Amino acid sequence: MFNEVYDVIVVGAGHAGSEAAAAAANMGSKTLLVTMNLQNIAQMSCNPAMGGIAKGQIVREIDALGGYSGIVSDTSAIQFKMLNKSKGPAMWSPRVQSDRMRFAEDWRLLLERTDNLDFYQEMVSGLIVEHGKVTGVKTSLGLKIKSKSVVLTNGTFLNGLIHIGDKNFGGGRAGERAATGITEQLIDLGFESGRMKTGTPPRVDGRSLDFSKMTEQPGDANPEKFSYLDTTKVLTKQRSCHMTYTSKLVHDLLREGFDRSPMFNGRIKSLGPRYCPSIEDKINRFADKDRHQLFVEPEGWNTCEVYVNGFSTSLPEDVQFKALRSVVGFENVKFFRPGYAIEYDYFPPTQLQHNLETKLVEGLYFAGQINGTTGYEEAASQGLMAGINASLKVQEKAPFTLKRDEAYIGVLIDDLITKGTEEPYRMFTSRAEYRTLLRQDNADLRLTPKGYELGIASENRLRRMEEKHNQAEKFVQFFRTTSVTPKEANPILESKNSALVKQQDKLFKLFARPNIDINDVRKFKAVENYIQDNSLDREVIEQTEIQVKYSGYIAKEKNNADKLNRLENIKIPSNFDYSKLQSMSLEAREKLAKIQPVTISQASRISGVSPSDISVLLVYMGR
Image (cartoon, rainbow, N blue to C red; front, side, top):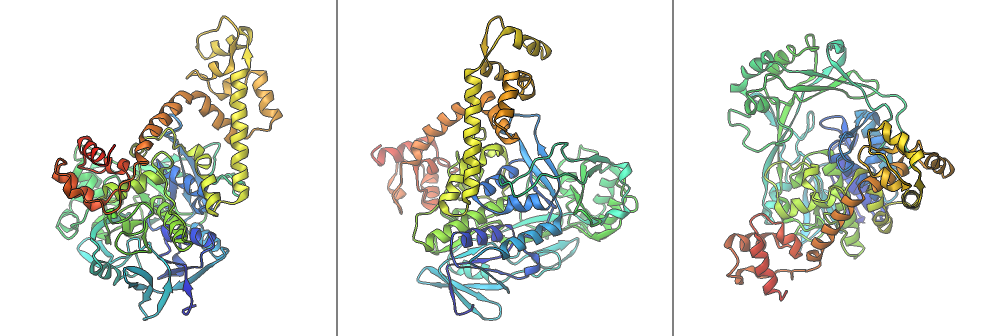
């Protein structure tokens, strides 16, 4: 294998690397996945869960394109919840609690069954770059492996430094060494780098906890799943999580260790994730709160290891232990391992193009935490896109990108390369201006045709999507064309305190009322007969309900997206000289010159570029 020239080499086998390797190999590229430990492929380094608010939409998008994260999330799930179900469908977000060991095993077995994919266990210590183009990698043993493109997905391993109280030591994850050499070479090549921080809570022995003192958090009564394929199944049994709280006593005990905390004594200088703060940060920032929620999450079907979500910390282990023993239900807790913080190198993502290829080195792609993101889902989606584009590069085909109105993945990547990030970036529904279009239920309708065209989504997946689309369209049309009499409608409307009708009316109009749902309209014999006669499944029925009840909102948002997309079609010439636009603000000229946006639309989203600056640019370009 060392004499071969690979099409794509993927460095790192976390969530980004695994998706990148699978995508490139499934597109026909001869791919090598290099990692420091093959036993830890797709390791859940932090919480044992996939999905959540906005993140669940990303997993469904990965699945719709033909990635593996949704499939593995289903096969390793121990609990399923659809979050935000009380809100509109734009906010619904699927989440699974995962069996951590099974998740990694299922990922590895899926990758091993993937054609065109080789594996190698060793640390990559550098890149081979010739004439501004990457041509391979160098390993710590001095091996040189040639390739036409390279995807770096190093996670928290680049010069990783682990902190527990006043102790610190090199490492990319608990029990694993850091990766060295790559950062220094990239800086020599002209890249700008920075440091970020993340953290993780202690893992404890579930046999030492008193769950009877906590609040049980069961999964959904009627669980769903992530993958649109019929090869994965919904859960028939689930494991519960539990919830408890910190207290004033717990906070006081934690404060006793603040003088030994690397967060407060200056040992850690980098920024951590704003929306997933450590317990000491929460106590400090929200001093008025007497308690904080802790979610007690099992790490699998059979293991007794438990993840204490909400208690992320880098305090000394004795302080962690003493404080946690004062939490209700944790009075006799035994540690498996303490929590810790980790600092690592990242590269500001404004140094990337939309296809995640670096601007400085041709054929080199970055994905995951190296770009300043946090979270398995954000990393996996970038890995998928980098793997796709590395493969397309080798095949001499046009890059594949997603716009902001096409996918949360498009929002994520556009935010990163256009705005950059100085703290770990996490996806939220609020970051997407077209979230009514980017729902978790329609990711297959949006993206599966694109995945099929790329060669990573199967024909079976495409046919299932087309069948769902056609059935839902016909069912919506049925509501538009079918009328009901006051005699049929009024008893149902009256039971829901909805205004009665005085004459025959279309079912669509009644169904569109906010207080009338699918269970109400199924009481009409014509509706139930249609569902039974056409064997409509849950997905088709849900899709129909959304299309009927939110048709006005969807149409309005689509119209807004179409208007803004006109600016996407106005291309800016590469290496455009912004310095000659003297009527534009100096800040705008500097930002535009640094980021080099491809379109007027992208330019308009850069921080520091005002609408008047865009007007100057349009005038100069003859618009």
